[in-house]
Length: 341
Image (cartoon, rainbow, N blue to C red; front, side, top):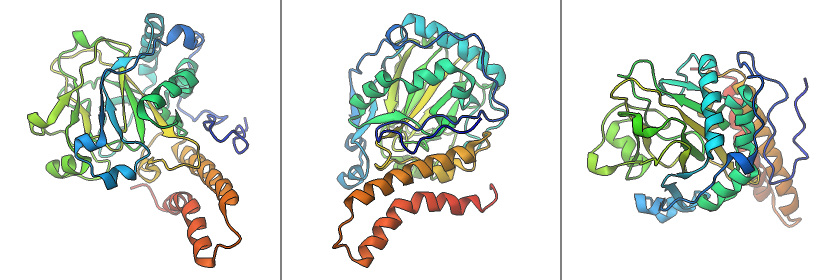
């Protein structure tokens, strides 16, 4: 089946899922149809932490699409929506990823590309109501991430509870939401924690960089534990700026979180997705997904450039403007020539 056309999509629209499903993803059958009016119960967070409050400089914040850092948990799913999502995540567990191909084998047990497996999850992540709600919290226009592998992800408890659910790290995407599918009240350990500082400071304390992860401890007085009121609640973060982790479990338990990712819209705008880092992951079809994303956003930047170029622009200015529009796509193209490390 041919890929859906996206070049003529409205500037604020998300990139459609590919028309093909990568080998290895097993679509569920007989799913309920997602209905935002019945399955969402969106509330606003009671508190938001901004980047400057974590120690980021005014200059650093000016390079971000928003000063938003992370929110307190807020309700997302209705009781009916949660019940359906619990059942779907339990089914997908048996078709989860078989590789720890994130950073240095950071995640213990996960299923990326859940939108290929579940139409309900795909439609949830595609929900305009959800995107607008999250955008109002973050202070920037958001849409479902254009790379399906990270647009809809599920994290499960690792089989070996000596392994962290997810080690200290920053994300390869700009914005993501962490939503509890399991009841946190019956789980011992497995807390979600945020470092109260800049990512550079957290990485320096642990001796890591980039999107690497490390299962180690940071000073307790610098760490905030996110208190989820219950299942169906989640919080939003500017993931590439927030140093965070999910702790080890203290005893075996079912711990399931849904992690939808979002990117800044329109497609011509600046977005912090690290396509080069994700190119090292082992998800089926991911290289083509990343190529589609960078082609889509480059086309949007070129279209915007077409409208903004002045006849008075000199050679140096034109060279810079065209280079800026094409740089992320050219970087991905160059990386595709190299074997996966």
